[in-house]
Length: 301
Ligand code: ZN
Image 1 (cartoon, rainbow, N blue to C red):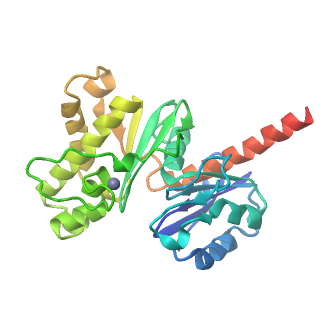
Image 2: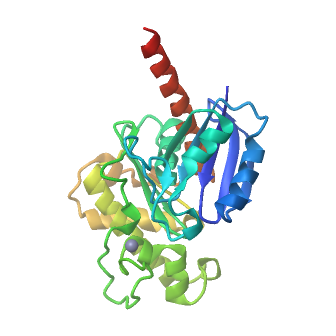
Image 3: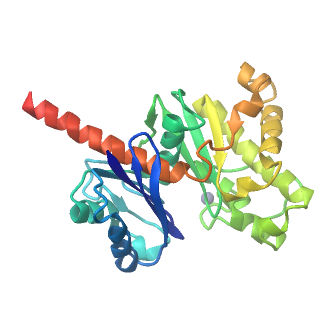
């Protein structure tokens, strides 16, 4: 069985076809322009591929409430061409297959929970650190939704004493994304992170904010695995610094061998390498297909 996946991002749309065991057969990246320019090109990729369902892991905010009139819409994004755009409707109508939908990071944590580093975990979180910071949460084997969806990238941070950077989030200033995203690094230090690889103080401070967030997520969600992905996490040694600081910040309060003895296998890189987002989308497509099967069986019984 073939399933389509879309990892919808602000700079690129990753489109793929995979089998239901998570093997990628084909994968392309299409630059994100306006929906009128980008969506036809994406549809062109899926045409004739024989996919039986499609999953979309999308940048947010998105409407995930199936009861809502705007379910499947990208809502109030600063990427204005995509604001109030019915992305699920567009693909459902054109391809005529069931479409699964969630945030990009909820897709990614589900991909990792089924095929990757959090395999076998009931509760796990995925944090992507790149142009923005997003957090996907899997609780009891399901992606977490609520009033809307978690916005763990925007939790408010306690500033490090010597840090005078105001933060680059237009909403909060000193939130996790405002202090530790790729653009925050560039704005604070005057150069992008890839040109600062040898500057110890850059990564020390980066680890301080990431660890602070991870320590908070551990206390809130009690995840069995914490996965840190995204471009910024490619910096050598950063993951190890975060591991160490998380242990320090928890200060012996949360007792578990995973924290006290095995932190290196508790806070980890994605096992799906650079593909947790797209494989997560494929998983969402698989779920959409299974849900339709369940509904059909219920009707025929
Ligand atoms: Zn913010």
